Length: 250
Image (cartoon, rainbow, N blue to C red; front, side):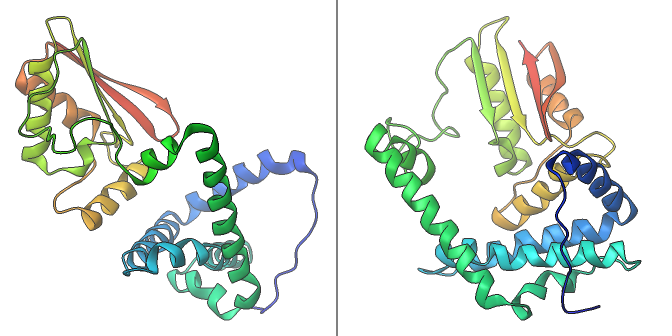
């Protein structure tokens, strides 16, 4: 493979065609692309947990890793196959120009967040990096009862926990709502055939790495947990992109 990649300028309306073609490329080599995506997130996760510097280094190297995806696409267009080793291509190709892009990204995000603090008094920063609520910091939804409400909603929460903890939270939600009340769960729900929602499958792998027992699940799994505790009706409804919601009616 040549060291230099030739770039061509195209009109903006070709963007839709590029998306279609990119999906076709992915369809021809699903596993290699999935492995590259998983390797990307795994590498960022490893760097991110390095004490003191990891949280700053991880976003800086994103442009370097992005070159690996460009190299994989370039290789496939010329008859080859994407390779996990290409993910590190950027570290050997003009890294001196790529790292400053990552630094600019980090500085830009920092300035934007600082600007929001002038408007909302730091609420966005608290939401992203600090306490998500102003309530009791010792509250524990495993041991404390949930408030009595008409609807309980959990977004991107159940997948953090193991199976027994998932079932416990579903039961507590059932106990918190009155007859006719609802429990809504939304996240990257995996399709029942475990074939189409690639984001949900990758997220499940990510949770296995980041947590002690968390995993993502199918809509049928969640409906089963709801029916076990007594919800009389439960169904799955797609939201947008890889996300869906499972609704249980008491």
